[in-house]
Length: 252
Image (cartoon, rainbow, N blue to C red; front, side):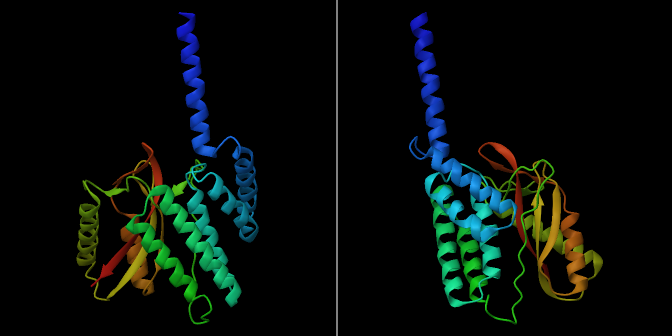
């Protein structure tokens, strides 16, 4: 009996050790990982992104699984740094940072079409950063009441109403918008891009316009998005999470 308890204790401690190792890297790098996470988090909270980046980069290299929202934070920093990239040297530095961010994000969460699109979008944003006629608009990730992380990419993305797969969800959302546009007899044309958070319970919150067309269409698009029915929540590692979703509202 005592031998069985001893064996169980050894197995438990081994499993716990492996779990900690998976999350924070090896036993040799654990302390470095914790320090990097601590430094980057403090600078990030103060929006000192240039100071936060080297520590974030080290955390990614040592322990990419330490925080679920590690790469979301990286993208927020990239957007802020792009905004300040006023010369060729800074733009080259930002390009390298974008590649580092997405190469490691894809390595951790597998390469997906969404991540490929996001990487291309950030390079395009950088390319236009020195054009005075192009206004760069960036958004900070909303902070939820329970302060849990908000994701852009998750294992199971949110689904509109009763949709049973992502393709069906996209079709149903477009049908919803088409119905609302017909009911309001909208004649002006254009495409408004909106962003919103699907909460852990499937509610739509924090809706905002990413790229607008006109005051009238922007107002209608925001109204339609805010009034969407509940989603099936997104999931990460077996639990419901907050997910930011972007949608194109087409006024044809």
